[in-house]
Length: 58
Image 1: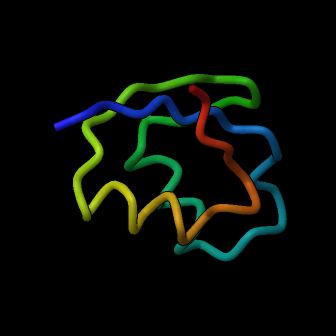
Image 2: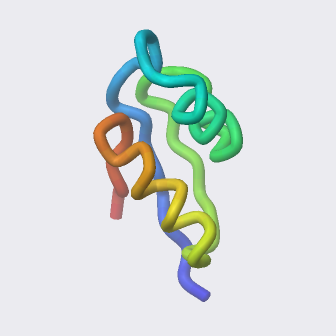
């Protein structure tokens, strides 16, 4: 499997609780934080759920 880097670019303030928990599950707690995960269907689904708050970094 390949890995992807996920960077939080927007704040989770005023987001629904489900999206806050998704960011927490990805390991993102602050803006500009970058985490690396395997590109599994579960992780890609979580990124899709909060795509307006994160970006995938090459």
